[in-house]
Amino acid sequence: MGQKTLTFKLPTDFSEDDLRLKIKRELQLTTFNFHLNNKSLDARNKNNIHWLVCVVVVSDELKEIDSAENEPLSIITKKRKNKIIVVGNGPAGFFAAYALQLAGFDTTMIERGSEVEKRDLAISRFESGLGFDPMNNYAFGEGGAGTFSDGKLTSRSKHISAERQFILESYIKAGAPAEIAYLAHPHLGTDNLKKIVKNLRDFFIQAGGEMHFETMLEDIDLQSGKRINLKTSKGDLDCDALFIAPGHSAFETYRMLMRHGVPFRTKNFALGSRMEHPQELINMAQWGKKSLPGVKAAEYRLTSEADGNHQVYSFCMCPGGMVVPATAYANNNIVNGMSHYQRDGKYANAACVAGISPDVLAGKPVTPYEALAEVERLESLFYNITIDYEAPACSIADFISGKLRNHSLSSSYPLGLSIAPLWELLPNQVSQSIRTGLIDFKKKMHGFENGILLGLESKTSSSIQVIREKTGETTGFENLYIVGEGSGYAGGIISSAADGLKAALAYIKKN
Ligand SMILES: Cc1cc2nc3c(=O)[nH]c(=O)nc-3n(C[C@H](O)[C@H](O)[C@H](O)COP(=O)(O)OP(=O)(O)OC[C@H]3O[C@@H](n4cnc5c(N)ncnc54)[C@H](O)[C@@H]3O)c2cc1C
Image 1 (cartoon, rainbow, N blue to C red):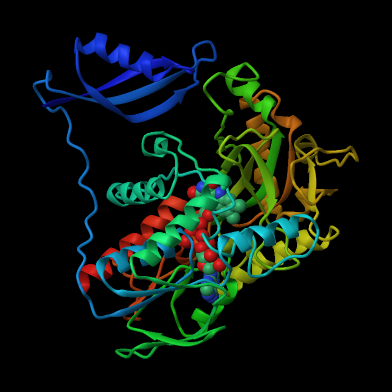
Image 2: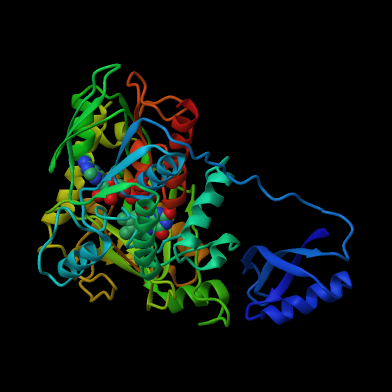
């Protein structure tokens, strides 16, 4: 049995039969099987937009094997004695706990929010103006921050191919479309994510794990060489090893860890607002047409170095999606984006942020504690100038000109907009860089200035980072692992999940 890898250029609405015929003709085969290895849209030439499809063909008529598949990740299951607690049910916490439980440890997960079904109701209530729930929102609750999201599964992290494969296979087993294994830009959508998160919970429990919701880690007792004691909102717990995957919104958890001397440092992060355009405008700009058969909605990725100080870039683009009120705490304004699997909403949104260091932001060297306070100050400023959770907003053209016109702006944001000079609310250095970036983007994308900017984007990455060893273990604290986006070493669903998984594998190897 031989195997050959081939790449074809195919029309956007190609069928499986078209592909089969191409393979048959190209390799002159009568019987064969194939699977897709990669599928990416090439839209560089608007007159010739096509898929580039890479297939692996297997047949008795082929003599050679031209490429080896990746080594899958192996977790050896055996009876192990240690008791492990994992805090936080986002991608990092879940995959750490799942691997530890599969390896045979007695693993318990605790999560401050509720099961995804109850969390879903809390978010709907918030978006209907019926009140914010500090335990269940876009940041907190089962599945973590990325559950009510676009579910993009792209990641630029290197050296995680075995982890990525394990994560994607687990998602597919839990109901994700099989295409995520080969698409260059895979995404799940909130509708799929809600089901996947619930099914993953069932897998973990079936493997013998314990899962406690509405249970918040409040304090820890970390004495070297001893069992770790935890104070939670539901009582005390203890364990041999503690994995904390709190995400980067869990400021009170960070502060509690800092009080116990857990070492953190500041790091560069990004600030800005979310931009939103009609999806048709983006389709026209990227494809030269309003729609393209076989492709859901056009994406974009913009970067600008024009400012010379701070790079400005688009981030977490959600085609056909919605801008959402993503604050984790009451009386703050933070926005983010989500979409459903079909990406068929009227609007396209993406963060538009400038990379900055906490020291530059504060105008003096700051401690991790102070860096958090600076971010919080902005989140509360953006909240205080509007009523309830309306998002302050202006047109991109007004941001560029620095003159606010009182025209009506349309948006998918569910809680209303309040016209405001965003360039005055953002820190001066960030505003200036974003203005230069927007002028650059206007040259790169036709009609770009007809979009709007809204709210504060302060959570594209963490402004602080725990100091830890290569294994993920916190420096100076045996058996304490801080993983995922909250550790400051990962960002996004896949890299956070892989970070949790890698730390769990290191612990398994050690024990
Ligand atoms: C609206 C939105 C859209 C996004 N879209 C995408 C996307 O399309 N693609 C992508 O790659 N990334 C996206 N992200 C980012 C992505 O969600 C995060 O990078 C990822 O979820 C981080 O995973 P994590 O497990 O490290 O942390 P989180 O997912 O933040 O999970 C942390 C969990 O810990 C819990 N927790 C915190 N403190 C405590 C405590 N003290 N006790 C108990 N539990 C606690 C929280 O409730 C939460 O469930 C999006 C984020 C948001 C908010």
